[in-house]
Length: 253
View (cartoon, rainbow, N blue to C red):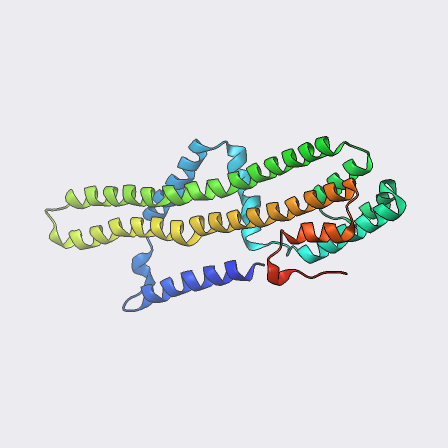
Protein backbone atom coordinates (compact mmCIF):
# COMPACT_ATOMS: atom_id res chain seq x y z
CA UNK A 1 0.00 0.00 0.00
CA UNK A 2 1.33 3.43 -0.96
CA UNK A 3 1.51 5.40 2.30
CA UNK A 4 1.18 8.82 0.66
CA UNK A 5 -2.03 7.86 -1.18
CA UNK A 6 -3.55 6.31 1.95
CA UNK A 7 -2.57 9.29 4.11
CA UNK A 8 -3.96 11.73 1.56
CA UNK A 9 -7.34 9.99 1.35
CA UNK A 10 -7.70 9.54 5.11
CA UNK A 11 -6.65 13.10 5.96
CA UNK A 12 -8.63 14.69 3.11
CA UNK A 13 -11.92 12.91 3.72
CA UNK A 14 -11.39 12.83 7.47
CA UNK A 15 -11.00 16.59 7.84
CA UNK A 16 -13.93 17.27 5.50
CA UNK A 17 -16.19 14.91 7.46
CA UNK A 18 -15.11 16.47 10.77
CA UNK A 19 -15.86 19.94 9.41
CA UNK A 20 -19.27 18.77 8.16
CA UNK A 21 -20.16 17.27 11.55
CA UNK A 22 -19.22 20.41 13.53
CA UNK A 23 -22.30 22.51 14.26
CA UNK A 24 -24.72 19.94 12.94
CA UNK A 25 -25.18 16.34 11.89
CA UNK A 26 -23.88 14.56 8.81
CA UNK A 27 -27.43 13.63 7.83
CA UNK A 28 -27.93 17.05 6.23
CA UNK A 29 -25.18 16.24 3.71
CA UNK A 30 -26.62 12.90 2.61
CA UNK A 31 -28.98 12.99 -0.35
CA UNK A 32 -29.58 9.92 -2.52
CA UNK A 33 -30.84 11.75 -5.67
CA UNK A 34 -27.75 13.97 -5.61
CA UNK A 35 -25.44 10.94 -5.40
CA UNK A 36 -27.31 9.31 -8.29
CA UNK A 37 -26.99 12.41 -10.47
CA UNK A 38 -23.26 12.90 -9.85
CA UNK A 39 -22.10 9.27 -9.91
CA UNK A 40 -24.52 8.10 -12.61
CA UNK A 41 -23.99 11.16 -14.79
CA UNK A 42 -20.20 10.99 -14.50
CA UNK A 43 -20.10 7.28 -15.34
CA UNK A 44 -22.50 7.78 -18.25
CA UNK A 45 -20.39 10.59 -19.70
CA UNK A 46 -17.22 8.51 -19.37
CA UNK A 47 -18.86 5.53 -21.10
CA UNK A 48 -19.85 7.82 -23.98
CA UNK A 49 -16.29 9.15 -24.16
CA UNK A 50 -14.41 5.81 -24.04
CA UNK A 51 -14.96 2.17 -25.09
CA UNK A 52 -16.42 0.06 -22.30
CA UNK A 53 -13.32 -2.19 -22.29
CA UNK A 54 -11.12 0.81 -21.43
CA UNK A 55 -13.50 1.95 -18.67
CA UNK A 56 -13.60 -1.52 -17.11
CA UNK A 57 -9.82 -1.79 -17.37
CA UNK A 58 -9.37 1.43 -15.41
CA UNK A 59 -10.13 -0.44 -12.16
CA UNK A 60 -6.95 -2.47 -12.63
CA UNK A 61 -5.04 0.69 -13.49
CA UNK A 62 -6.35 2.45 -10.36
CA UNK A 63 -4.68 -0.19 -8.19
CA UNK A 64 -1.32 1.28 -9.24
CA UNK A 65 -2.17 4.43 -7.28
CA UNK A 66 -2.60 2.41 -4.08
CA UNK A 67 -0.35 -0.62 -4.55
CA UNK A 68 3.00 -0.29 -6.25
CA UNK A 69 6.15 -2.31 -5.87
CA UNK A 70 9.13 -0.14 -4.99
CA UNK A 71 11.61 0.06 -7.85
CA UNK A 72 15.19 -0.18 -6.58
CA UNK A 73 17.26 1.44 -9.30
CA UNK A 74 20.56 0.67 -7.58
CA UNK A 75 19.78 -3.06 -7.75
CA UNK A 76 19.04 -2.79 -11.48
CA UNK A 77 22.30 -0.93 -12.08
CA UNK A 78 24.23 -3.56 -10.12
CA UNK A 79 22.59 -6.32 -12.16
CA UNK A 80 23.43 -4.61 -15.45
CA UNK A 81 27.05 -4.11 -14.39
CA UNK A 82 27.31 -7.79 -13.43
CA UNK A 83 25.77 -8.73 -16.77
CA UNK A 84 28.36 -6.54 -18.50
CA UNK A 85 31.18 -8.30 -16.65
CA UNK A 86 29.87 -11.75 -17.59
CA UNK A 87 29.39 -10.69 -21.21
CA UNK A 88 32.96 -9.37 -21.55
CA UNK A 89 34.40 -12.40 -19.78
CA UNK A 90 32.34 -15.26 -21.26
CA UNK A 91 30.48 -13.77 -24.23
CA UNK A 92 26.88 -12.64 -24.79
CA UNK A 93 25.52 -16.16 -25.20
CA UNK A 94 26.58 -16.95 -21.63
CA UNK A 95 24.02 -14.39 -20.40
CA UNK A 96 21.19 -16.86 -20.98
CA UNK A 97 21.75 -18.23 -17.49
CA UNK A 98 20.97 -14.80 -15.99
CA UNK A 99 17.46 -14.64 -17.48
CA UNK A 100 15.95 -16.67 -14.63
CA UNK A 101 16.89 -13.90 -12.17
CA UNK A 102 15.14 -11.14 -14.16
CA UNK A 103 11.55 -10.50 -13.06
CA UNK A 104 10.79 -7.42 -15.17
CA UNK A 105 9.21 -8.48 -18.52
CA UNK A 106 10.72 -5.51 -20.39
CA UNK A 107 14.19 -6.30 -19.03
CA UNK A 108 13.80 -9.97 -19.88
CA UNK A 109 12.60 -9.19 -23.41
CA UNK A 110 15.56 -6.89 -24.07
CA UNK A 111 18.03 -9.46 -22.77
CA UNK A 112 16.47 -12.25 -24.83
CA UNK A 113 16.64 -10.18 -28.03
CA UNK A 114 20.27 -9.29 -27.34
CA UNK A 115 21.22 -12.93 -26.68
CA UNK A 116 19.45 -13.93 -29.90
CA UNK A 117 21.80 -11.67 -31.83
CA UNK A 118 19.38 -8.92 -32.89
CA UNK A 119 21.21 -5.96 -34.43
CA UNK A 120 21.59 -2.94 -32.09
CA UNK A 121 19.54 -0.63 -34.33
CA UNK A 122 16.66 -3.12 -34.58
CA UNK A 123 16.89 -3.92 -30.86
CA UNK A 124 16.66 -0.23 -30.03
CA UNK A 125 13.62 0.18 -32.30
CA UNK A 126 11.85 -2.82 -30.77
CA UNK A 127 12.43 -1.64 -27.21
CA UNK A 128 11.41 1.94 -28.05
CA UNK A 129 8.19 0.63 -29.59
CA UNK A 130 7.53 -1.36 -26.41
CA UNK A 131 8.09 1.80 -24.37
CA UNK A 132 5.66 3.77 -26.54
CA UNK A 133 2.89 1.22 -26.00
CA UNK A 134 3.56 1.10 -22.25
CA UNK A 135 3.36 4.90 -22.14
CA UNK A 136 0.10 4.86 -24.12
CA UNK A 137 -1.51 2.35 -21.74
CA UNK A 138 -0.48 4.43 -18.74
CA UNK A 139 -1.66 7.65 -20.40
CA UNK A 140 -5.11 6.21 -21.09
CA UNK A 141 -5.63 5.17 -17.47
CA UNK A 142 -4.67 8.60 -16.13
CA UNK A 143 -6.72 10.31 -18.85
CA UNK A 144 -9.91 8.46 -17.89
CA UNK A 145 -9.59 9.58 -14.27
CA UNK A 146 -8.84 13.11 -15.45
CA UNK A 147 -12.00 13.01 -17.57
CA UNK A 148 -14.02 11.79 -14.59
CA UNK A 149 -12.59 14.66 -12.57
CA UNK A 150 -13.73 17.10 -15.25
CA UNK A 151 -17.23 15.64 -15.59
CA UNK A 152 -18.06 15.25 -11.87
CA UNK A 153 -18.35 19.01 -11.07
CA UNK A 154 -20.37 19.51 -14.28
CA UNK A 155 -22.80 16.78 -13.17
CA UNK A 156 -22.97 18.51 -9.81
CA UNK A 157 -23.99 21.73 -11.51
CA UNK A 158 -26.67 19.87 -13.47
CA UNK A 159 -28.03 18.50 -10.19
CA UNK A 160 -27.99 21.98 -8.73
CA UNK A 161 -29.98 23.31 -11.69
CA UNK A 162 -32.51 20.51 -11.26
CA UNK A 163 -32.82 21.42 -7.58
CA UNK A 164 -33.26 25.11 -8.40
CA UNK A 165 -36.01 24.34 -10.89
CA UNK A 166 -37.84 22.30 -8.25
CA UNK A 167 -37.34 25.11 -5.74
CA UNK A 168 -38.78 27.73 -8.09
CA UNK A 169 -41.80 25.54 -8.68
CA UNK A 170 -42.47 25.61 -4.92
CA UNK A 171 -42.16 29.38 -4.42
CA UNK A 172 -45.73 29.53 -3.15
CA UNK A 173 -44.51 27.66 -0.05
CA UNK A 174 -41.72 29.77 1.56
CA UNK A 175 -40.95 27.08 4.15
CA UNK A 176 -39.77 24.69 1.41
CA UNK A 177 -37.32 27.11 -0.24
CA UNK A 178 -34.52 26.63 2.32
CA UNK A 179 -34.44 22.81 2.25
CA UNK A 180 -34.77 22.77 -1.55
CA UNK A 181 -31.81 25.17 -1.92
CA UNK A 182 -29.72 23.04 0.45
CA UNK A 183 -30.40 19.90 -1.59
CA UNK A 184 -29.52 21.77 -4.80
CA UNK A 185 -26.15 22.85 -3.40
CA UNK A 186 -25.31 19.38 -2.03
CA UNK A 187 -25.14 18.01 -5.59
CA UNK A 188 -22.41 20.50 -6.51
CA UNK A 189 -20.67 19.61 -3.25
CA UNK A 190 -20.58 15.92 -4.21
CA UNK A 191 -19.18 16.69 -7.66
CA UNK A 192 -16.42 18.93 -6.33
CA UNK A 193 -15.45 16.47 -3.56
CA UNK A 194 -15.22 13.49 -5.93
CA UNK A 195 -13.25 15.45 -8.50
CA UNK A 196 -10.72 17.04 -6.14
CA UNK A 197 -10.29 14.30 -3.54
CA UNK A 198 -10.59 11.18 -5.72
CA UNK A 199 -10.47 11.43 -9.51
CA UNK A 200 -7.91 14.20 -10.15
CA UNK A 201 -5.46 13.10 -7.39
CA UNK A 202 -5.52 9.51 -8.68
CA UNK A 203 -4.88 10.77 -12.22
CA UNK A 204 -1.90 12.75 -10.92
CA UNK A 205 -0.51 9.77 -9.00
CA UNK A 206 -0.84 7.53 -12.09
CA UNK A 207 1.09 10.08 -14.17
CA UNK A 208 3.85 10.14 -11.56
CA UNK A 209 4.01 6.34 -11.43
CA UNK A 210 4.15 6.19 -15.24
CA UNK A 211 7.01 8.69 -15.43
CA UNK A 212 9.00 6.74 -12.82
CA UNK A 213 8.46 3.39 -14.54
CA UNK A 214 9.35 4.73 -17.99
CA UNK A 215 12.54 6.30 -16.62
CA UNK A 216 13.59 2.92 -15.18
CA UNK A 217 12.82 1.15 -18.45
CA UNK A 218 14.87 3.71 -20.39
CA UNK A 219 17.74 3.01 -17.98
CA UNK A 220 17.36 -0.72 -18.64
CA UNK A 221 17.32 -0.18 -22.42
CA UNK A 222 20.43 2.01 -22.25
CA UNK A 223 22.18 -0.64 -20.16
CA UNK A 224 21.28 -3.49 -22.52
CA UNK A 225 22.51 -1.56 -25.56
CA UNK A 226 25.76 -0.73 -23.74
CA UNK A 227 26.31 -4.40 -22.84
CA UNK A 228 25.65 -5.36 -26.45
CA UNK A 229 28.21 -2.82 -27.69
CA UNK A 230 30.79 -4.20 -25.24
CA UNK A 231 31.21 -1.11 -23.07
CA UNK A 232 33.51 -1.28 -20.08
CA UNK A 233 31.56 -1.92 -16.84
CA UNK A 234 32.87 1.34 -15.35
CA UNK A 235 31.72 3.27 -18.41
CA UNK A 236 28.37 1.49 -18.21
CA UNK A 237 27.97 2.57 -14.60
CA UNK A 238 28.67 6.18 -15.50
CA UNK A 239 26.05 6.02 -18.26
CA UNK A 240 23.42 4.55 -15.96
CA UNK A 241 24.17 7.05 -13.20
CA UNK A 242 22.94 9.81 -15.53
CA UNK A 243 19.42 8.47 -14.82
CA UNK A 244 19.90 8.79 -11.05
CA UNK A 245 19.98 11.98 -8.91
CA UNK A 246 23.59 12.82 -7.85
CA UNK A 247 22.94 12.22 -4.14
CA UNK A 248 21.70 8.67 -4.87
CA UNK A 249 24.63 7.56 -7.03
CA UNK A 250 26.63 4.73 -5.48
CA UNK A 251 29.49 3.09 -7.31
CA UNK A 252 29.94 -0.70 -7.09
CA UNK A 253 33.66 -0.35 -7.86
